[in-house]
Amino acid sequence: ASSVRGSYVQKLSLGAITAIALAAFLVGLLVFGLLTRRLTRLTRDVQQFTDSGFDPQAIQALDSAQQAGDLRGDEIGRLRHAFGRMAAKIQEQFEGLQETDRLRRELVSNVSHDLRTPLASMHGYVETLLLKNDSLDEAERLHYLEITRKHSLRLGRLIGDLFELSKLESATIRPDREWFSLAELLQDVSQEFELEASNKGIRLQAESPRETAMVHADIGLIQRVLENLLRNAMKYTPHGGEISISLEPRPGSVAVAVADTGCGIAKQELDHIFDRFYRSESADVEPSDSAGLGLAIVKRILDLHGSRITVSSRLNEGTRFEFSLPAAEAA
Image 1 (cartoon, helix red, strand yellow):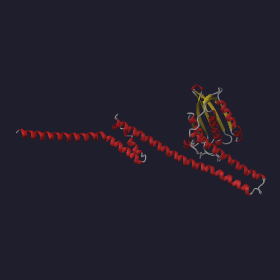
Image 2 (tube, rainbow, N blue to C red; image 1 turned 45 degrees about the horizontal axis):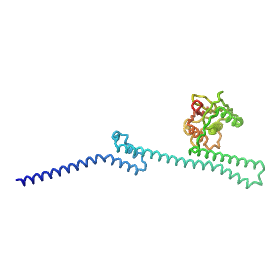
Image 3 (spheres, rainbow, N blue to C red; image 1 turned 30 degrees about the horizontal axis):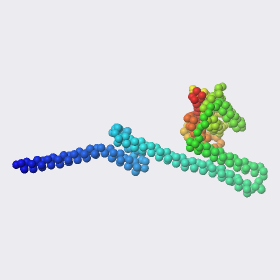
Image 4 (spheres, one colour; image 1 turned 90 degrees about the vertical axis):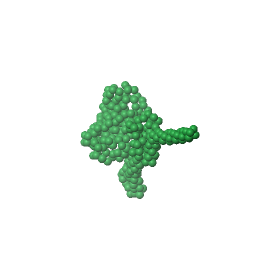
């Protein structure tokens, strides 16, 4: 009887131990599956993102940490959220590279076109001078040379503008800020254009307050801004028109406005006038040799100064550009 009881207890104990071990194994598998389920899903999403070639839908899956089910504060939740932000950053940089490449191709296309035209004209007139030099009289020879000189000056301006815009966009130029009188600079710049305005029959008026209007900025860059704005106004203002440049002291800043009574800008073009190589198509003026870089340079210079330029315009009534610079009270 003792032997039978011992054998029964042994079998019962062995069965119980086996059942407990099996139950523990199953519970362990269940717990392990619950613990690794989110990690497995994260691994799958990361693999999909890698294989998708920066697919926005894959990024949305990675960024699902914003959803209620992944707002846990454990390590897996934080890891998933970090991967989501990393994916969004990679996508942003990838789109930036695509935009940069698009702008590069556009720049090469525009530069090639703008360089080819004056070069072809110069080449044609120089060949004419070489082939017909003996048969040309002095007036014709001077005429051809003057045209060649005009195209060479256009090339020089285009190359200079491209070089300046390239430096501004590559962040190699830092504004050398100093205190200077904006009213005096306004007068100096307006005097540069007085003769040109007089020859075109345009009234150029500079309005400045009695005070000196001291501002803190790079005087050379701000002078370039004013020159480009006035040159643009000269181009689109007809004979008998008026251009005004004025200053308005405000709390902590001085506002500068350049207005003209020219042909104006169509509403659908206002968002593009600061783009590189953009030329207004609605302007009822003579064709210009401008490369379309002046306003792009203006915007970039003011961006470096932390200033925003605004524009308002009405067709056949005129255009007004306005920006502000920090005054003495804001220093």
